[in-house]
Length: 185
Image (cartoon, rainbow, N blue to C red; front, side, top):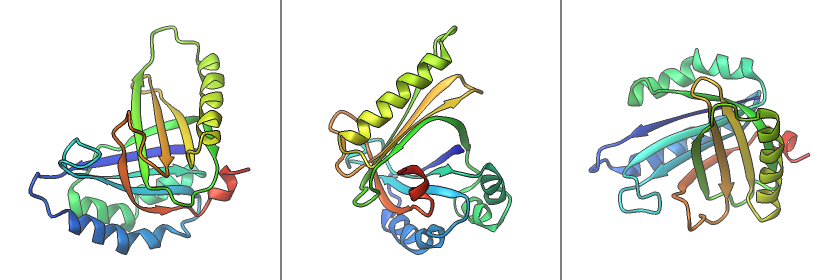
């Protein structure tokens, strides 16, 4: 499995309706994508719950790394580059994945946490498995913890029905979940 994510910062005066239209048009194309557990099309708007200005992001959990490679080298990613320029793509290796029902996923949270030198990665993996399971038991649709070994960071992604008050969630515009059943086992 792989976690792949990129975000486009957009001007403050960007017509965010265009992003909602893009997600509505392109989202269903991903509903049957082979090798994909899920793809969340998300947005933040200046003054909105995400609070960090206008932005558009895509977050993927790939079941098959080969399918991720195929995406990055075909017309689907070319459409991203043509529309927004070539983004910096973050890639991380899942440590823990927990999933309940995808129904009603409305918000996504994403965080990156620097890992201390000498961090016990086996203990981290076990702790993150417990944390992800607890998040889903508490009502999250899914929780993923992953390792970015290039930056030595822990990456956490969670899908929620309601936005967590303490975090800055991104609004889910479309959730394609062709491989969700593989996660909810």
